[in-house]
Figure 1 (tube, one colour):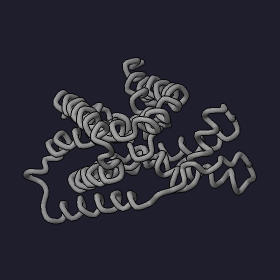
Figure 2 (cartoon, rainbow, N blue to C red):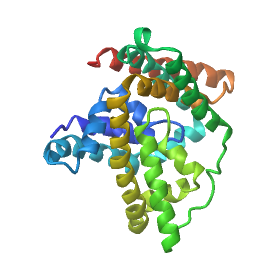
Figure 3 (cartoon, rainbow, N blue to C red):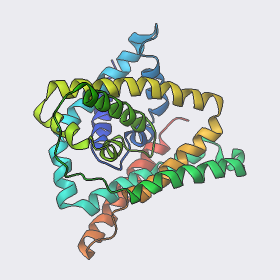
Length: 270
């Protein structure tokens, strides 16, 4: 078992709680993105034991973060919104040098790749103009139609979790499911957790195979899209400058986030 993945899972889980911050980006920062895709995609293969050894500790960490830190994240976002968001913005931008190097962009990117990058960035940045109602009341009803909607929403959010730059929580917000999902976690509402969790599991397996296939067949174009997704997510996460005190604190947290991501990027084996 890769028990060091428990800590990585904690970091990914904390980020997946925050609309606008992608757990996939954190996987890139931690240097486990490709291995994560391979493990999720190969979970049902003959080598499932090796993949379980990677995924189980990661899942334990993610689950612990979802259950233990949801209130802390809500507190930070409510009382220290600007510094918290700027910290995550630093993390997001700090991973770009590693991705740029890893993709061989300096020698491999042509006009078409930059066009893909720009389109991906614009698509994610457009989400900054969407303001779903985070304060909506959770809907705990579980009719057949409602269960199907929750399942599909969980699957869509899971694919977003795997894509650097797109937040699974934000997708749930846009689809109107975020309050229900948070309520299910906070109250341990097993039926709701089972339906949404089933969708998440399905989305993770299908999404990992799709992304792995794209990286295998069109690696340069896929990396261009991933870089664009990350650049575009900055516009979603950026909280504004706030008061002078918030700006000062946010500058510190931004630098800390950028330095942390750059550190992991320098020590990541390409």
